Length: 222
Image 1 (cartoon, rainbow, N blue to C red):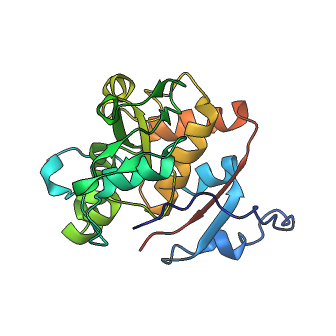
Image 2 (cartoon, rainbow, N blue to C red):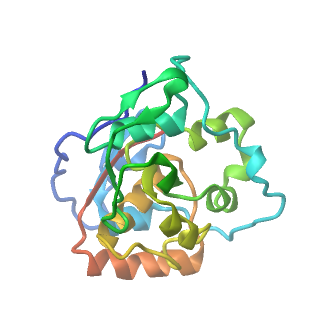
């Protein structure tokens, strides 16, 4: 059974660089498997700014909820298993019963999996706008089923997820712990080397300061 990365190691604190000095190595490379580490404000500055394009988007271009390891539990099931605050019983076909989940967007507690959606923190449509239209089908599938970083897929109250839709971080943030959402949004965009548009990056610059400029640490996806 696949296991979500439950947490990341304590962030490495790079030594201060003189003005104009090269960025630390972890920030310079976008190679798959490289670890990126920076303050949120710096991380926002490292995002590529590019005009977004929605043309040609279709959700069916992303194969999602696959059973990557063949254990009978698809990506949705794996996220529910990883994020349960009380472990469910796993039945035939990975049917889950008896567990409990807490939605990080609104704090609501749920015991029925039907009350939960698995949110792509960066929505599929937003990823398309931000560069995924140029990806291969295989890479879009990896993005849609990303169990390699706990921030990419989140079990949340279905109605809250519906209210979010495909809006970006400038347009929508959860009522509960919005700063964590902002930091995680930037982390996922960096992980997958997705761009931001001008209005999005302006909003992120302001939010980084409002949120106390926390660290962002993430492993680049392949």
